[in-house]
Length: 291
Ligand code: NDP
Image (cartoon, rainbow, N blue to C red):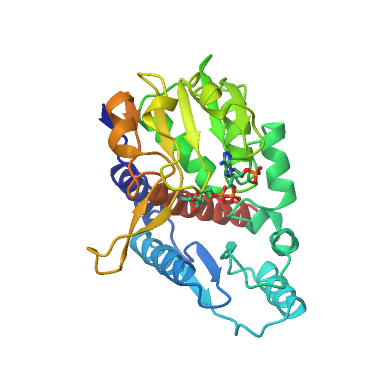
């Protein structure tokens, strides 16, 4: 079994971006990070994004509106950022507090600054295989992990478990694309799928984006499978200072014995998500500079 080391691959990507940004004279790429509320996971994700941006030389502008902000006020803030020529990318940290229509918020971000790739136009561009759009960071990170680990999806049976707009659907479309590294034969499963184990067992490449701790067990995979575990789940663990440990959607101790390659949790997909956000920000800067 070979471990697909997301930390190492993300570090390589970050070093490449750092070298690229160093070549930019004058104003550096800038990302606005908007976080509403104090969701602990969101606080740590935004911190990580800010830190990675600084490491690369990308300017970040962290905006923390009060939790009492109304949807209309948030729209006004996004409109302001949309028209600010010194802001290249905008990220609104999900989840937003109750009362916000997240999809409407994602739509409000200008497509050319939508570095998170959740805008309708950018999601559509994945389906159209139009490379001018922004691919959402987790699916893009998964494809980058596979490519940099030497996994070519051509002709392989790729089983995606999960059909969210954030991970499952876009990654399935990317795996299906008619381009080098992709060309997979894709099956998408979800909570209503009949005989999930039977389908997962057929996978040459399994992408698990479910959000259920260690749900995929060794009896559900075939030997030699490549496993990308997107899930981030907290299991109570009194031996840890935090009181919990992070696990994926795949039961790593047993599935890793059968897999040819597998991502760990943490240290697999997670670091790639942040690295791809930075890659998208540099792309947005180039787009803005070209106009
Ligand atoms: P969602 O909850 O939006 O989607 C989960 C999907 O899994 C749904 O399509 C759901 O089906 C399906 N599902 C749930 N239970 C089952 C089941 N028992 N059998 C089969 N399918 C099931 O989650 P996300 O896509 O946003 O995230 C998935 C996981 O990935 C989470 O753990 C999340 O924390 C993690 N994540 C990690 C990221 C990273 O950077 N590493 C980034 C984003 C997410 P249905 O549609 O029918 O409800």
